[in-house]
Image (tube, rainbow, N blue to C red):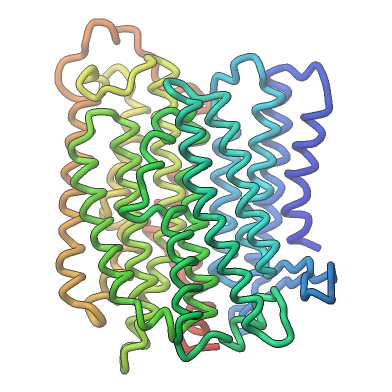
Length: 495
């Protein structure tokens, strides 16, 4: 029942906060942090118990729901799901612990955060397609209220655009899930059965339509160019911790969903369109990097780097599904790299958006041109921003490099010309982060920031934990690679 407890405890904590009264800011936050840490410990324990030589899915929990329709409460994890879920739980705990203006509604704010943690983890732990869809959709509800109620600027407009855009993608997913359900006999929503039977193998109109609906739905969530336009405004107007969750966790639902459903359940169809998917991925890499370079808004700049980095992830998945002869090892490398990129991006960009929250709490300003000279004024803030920026641009010794090296090593063997073009995105990413650091921390300190405060204890403590994560992965990644490779080998080799 470890996975059920992982989902259930945050939901129970959310209900406790929601129905209770007279919670102070400090009490509500401490309670929420304590509850949010429980899934981290449970998943860490599952990680230690995971058998890398065992079955693809482990810790399986199954209870019949509507047997006549093939519906059931099914949970389980492979190495990929376990790695992404553990990272997600940690990012939630960090975001809940990070100081934020709850606008005198701490009880409601932390209840929604715990609710969102529960349903988000459900996406990564579900082994039932219908259950996956329910959790996938409920995550939109939690983020809608976090942006609309506790955001700033045009928060309600940003929340509405986020919900409407991503809900359209969810509806496409629902149609595709029904198509997969009807394609197997007897009808079932069991992911294990669908992965094993590959019911729509062989192509045809039905397979093409189901695949298209799945990919558009997940592309919106990821997001991939050109269905990315909801993302920048949602980030800019969301509170810092909500942005950290949006980038660190919710975007991973798109790429994880690609791996779990079209890649795993429709291998032949995925291979047929792998090159097209890779082209969209490279377009996202370059577009995200170049547009980010042109942004003067700190948060918008980091938001566009998310499009760039999720492009790397999709490129790795596309390469893994190419099914080109004698490239199995390269495709496995690419899938491992895509998964490590999800973990690394969650930790790194989560930290960057929390840092954005610290800037907003102190200045109510994101304009890069209004800053400068903060190095001496805020050395701790400078240090953590520099570290996270270098990790994001792929500096060796940090998690981003491990992920991108695997992705491009695999891509060079399968689509070498796309790898050459995609590498340009790393160069532009380096430029945009170095320019950002120069504008924030070097030069002359504006007079109005003469009393700018450095990070407080809770802030630098949270950032230290996230930073330790992407530093350890960069220096000693074996513990993560071993877990992911166990499942990547089985998936690349076929069901």
